[in-house]
Every structure is written in structure tokens, then in C-alpha cells.
Length: 452
Image (tube, rainbow, N blue to C red; front, side):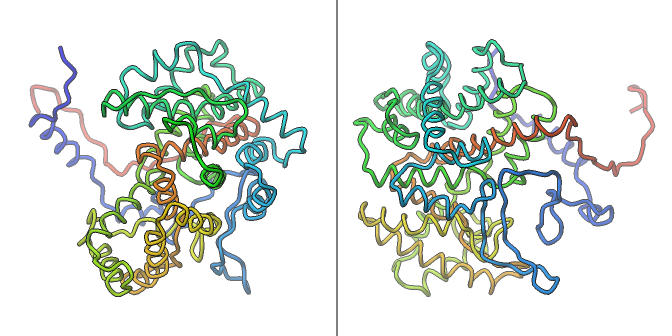
């Protein structure tokens, strides 16, 4: 018997039956005051937990009213703008320092940082033959699936896999933080070789290099990269590392961890959540949208022509016809996304180095025009601004990262936030997260088979 990959007419018919009996009247959500997507009508998330790891600020209180303000992001109470300016000013990589801050709650002293870096270096290895036996076999064209498969397989190599005492979970989390870059890059190399039939390169990480430097070293055939490339990739990882407890994948980490399951299962679940195009895959949509825009817009410097294309996007007449301008707007931020603001200055610098200033000018123009077009075409309850995904895909393309690694790069960063939240869940509660769903179907009588 072979594994079937075809949707048969019988399956289509059964799906229609499922749809018929599963579709609900959406007005019932309002009737029973159910917050669809765990959000109220204004898009504000329903309070489902407490955290000390990070905080997002998009509104301030003025005369008793909530008023939109420039967005702020805090890691353990520290403004991310101050944090990034600190290590950039000192010409240091920030990934390891920020990981320490999120995991342990305070900025490390110099000796503490060196000790932590040493711990990550010690953990930066995979089990014997793991790359050959797990990553190279059955490669996938979706590296997020390869990453999830690799994480779940690490369970089999861990003699204390089910031990959820805090020191053991910390060991598992720091190991995953160290090995995510290897599993993602090697997963891509396997795909590139076995599916796309290109040459295979497997470079070992260097003990002397930072996480960002090692990613570029392992990915490129010649292992070469510039200092600016490494600095900007490091910054991207820091900005994607954590974003409050309410995002989908972090909430998944809390939910799955609350059941008492092992670390590998919890992180694999978070990966499955992040993979979705509504979450971690958004920057791919931005890059593809701009590729379509550059084909359709004849003069990239003509604001009227660019605005016309943006209107077509909203009217479902361009690109994927979903009615969205990707990279614009955020579930929380309204006036500005601080991550995009931090990123932008370095994006311009990298675009100059890479000879892509015209592309940067187009991105900047869309960033300015899109909020005006959206405000004119749509009734919106809050402001719209560029989010971090607007620029991150462009940055990754300038770093020559393959598009298959865009979302895995997000995961390489966010594993730090997930790890901190898993520890927080295990430390603070022994209650399993169990939301309520209201049944809206009336009871029915059982009917014997011969009477149906």
C-alpha cells in the first residue's frame, strides 16, 4: 500500500458534509460575547495570563482615555531601543547578551556574559550522526517542518527528556538556543541538495563566532561575510527574539507547557504555530508583494502610480487578491512599531552597501503612502504603520538568505522568548490552561443504523 497524496472525489464529498455540519452563524459570537481570536471588537487581546518577560506599549492614558502613542517594546523592563543602542554603540553582538537578559531577568555583567557565551558554545553541537540520520533523510521543502522534526527527534537522544525540573528544562532550552541555527541551516542545505539538486555544503560552527556570524558562516559556500552583514543579522535576531506573551506561538508555548509535557513537544508546537503565514511567514508575503509591485509599477519613483497599485491591493485586484498590504499594520501597535524604526537606519546602510538603494527608496515610499491609502479606503479603529516584517524580508534578501530560511530565522530568534516563557509557566503555575467553548448545537436523538 502506498502513501496517498491525492484528494479524491470521495474525500471532497465528505469534506462538503463536514463543512455543512460545522459552519456556525457568526452572529452567535456577539450573542454569547465570545471574543473571536481572543480579541475584543477593537482588536485588543483578552487578558489570559501574566508575564514579566516583555511588554508592548501602544497606548497611553490621557484624561482617563486610552490614546495611541508611538510603540514601545521592553525586554525585562528595558526599552529595546536603549538595549540595541547599547551593544551597537560598543560594537558588540547583542544576541547572546539579550538571551541572557530574557532568560535570567537582568543584564549580565561582563564575566556573567562570558560564562553564558561559553555555555552556549559548549551546547553548540548535535548528537553523533544526527545530521546524517535525521536532517539529511526525508528532507522537506519547508524548513520549519524540518526544524520541528529535528526538535522532536532530539527527544530520543536525551536521557532525561521527560524531566521537567527547572535546571533540566534550562539545560534543554539553552541547548535548543545553541542548536537551532545548525538544524535550520543544515535543513536548508539538505533541501537545496536533495530537492533542488545543488551542491551540498555542511560547515561546522566556529567556537569563536557569535550566533549571527555562525549562521552566515554555515550557510555560505565560502563561509565569508562582512561585518555589516553580521551586525544587521544579529540586530534582526534581537528584534525578533520576544514580543510579549500574547503572540500566537508564545501563547502556544504556555498552553502546551501547562500540560506538563516535555520541552521538545512544547517547542515543536510553538514552531507549528510560528510557521503560519499569519504569524512568522508574513515577511515572505512582503517580499513577494514587492516583487509583484516592481513588475506592475513602471516608474518606482512615481507616488501616484505606486498609490494606484496599493489601492488595487486593497480592492483585491493585485498580487494574491487577498485585499492586504503586507507589512503594514499590527495587532497592537498603531502609530509605530519600534522594531521597524530601529531596523530602518541599518536597512538603508545595507542597501547602500549592496547597491539596492532604488529598492530601499521604493520600500520607504510605500511605508509613507500605505497608511494614507488604507485610511482613505478602509474604516479603521486605530492607526496603521509599518511593522517589523515590512523590512525584515528585504534585509534577508540583501543578506542573500534563501527565502526558505526567512521564517526559520524568526524561530532561531524566538526560541529564546519561548524558552523564557516555558520557564515562567513552569515556575508560576501548576494549572493546565483550559479555555471554555460554548456548544451551540441542540441535542439530537440517536437513530439505529437501519433507520437512518
